[in-house]
Amino acid sequence: VREINKKYRRAVKIIGDLEGFRIRIGYFKNRREIFLEKNKSVYLVKNIYGNEKEIPVDYKGSFLDFGKAEYVFIDDGNIVLKIKDIDKGKIKVKVVNGGILKQRKGVNVPGAELKFKTLNEKDRKDIKFAIENNFDFLALSFVRNKEDILNLKKEIGKERIKIIAKIENREGIKNIDEIIDVSDGIMIARGDMGISIPFYEVPFVQKEIIKKCKNKRKFSITATQMLESMVENPVPTRAEVSDIANAVLDGTDCVMLSAETSVGKYPVECVKIMNEIVKFSEMYKKEIITFSYLTF
Image (cartoon, rainbow, N blue to C red; front, side, top):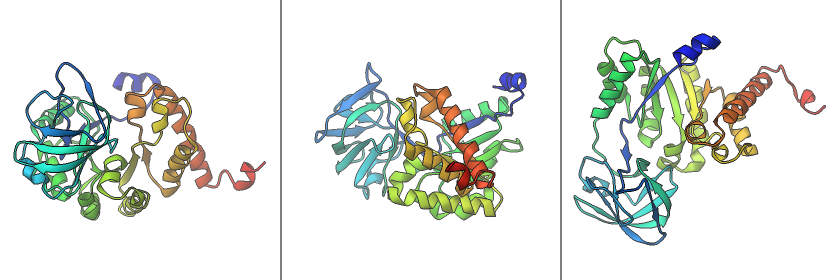
């Protein structure tokens, strides 16, 4: 990236993404994915290679911490499991929304009282790597309060890496003002956010966070599913175009692609299309383009 920046006179920055306060699916035996059938009962377990009957998760605490939760959401809600019975070592669940489940997908358990340290051992290794390779930013997932950011700053020490707080749960939304104060920027990570809070609240939370960031002179990044259909298709939906344009009109400083460029079929096209939408939206916002221009 540094060499390409120099060659083409670009200023593309490098962000390291830390897992932080995050649960993930573990690994399956002799395969990378399984199929979960709707209405079937399965178990969430720990420390094994999984299969269709036993799904491994990497939560280090007791499953009793899930006691107040009703559902487990996996892969931004594509897989939904209803909790039926819990003990320390495993959880019996019923598959509400089934389908293909891949290894290392994110797990969200609204209502659970999870016990986590801000940074895990993998995070510390990733921070060391980021420092050694002169990353520009570190983004911390599932930030709950200012202490999460202050703990990361303590780990970084005097290094000049800037910190982005990813807001994707109710606690982070509740404490957004104090989080903005101690962060360099905020990422509005709408995937898990739309599980932690009702999905119809997400657009309004997005607008309010962007506004708060502008007032405090911190940058904001709007992320997740902005061109999701282009993972498989060469053109975006009109709703996706409107989503990007509205984020720009709201005042977001950055828009972000994820699955679209990491695993999608049309990564270059996604970047080109997003760039076109952003440029046009900025011109409209600055009144370089008016409605009369659009209608003739």
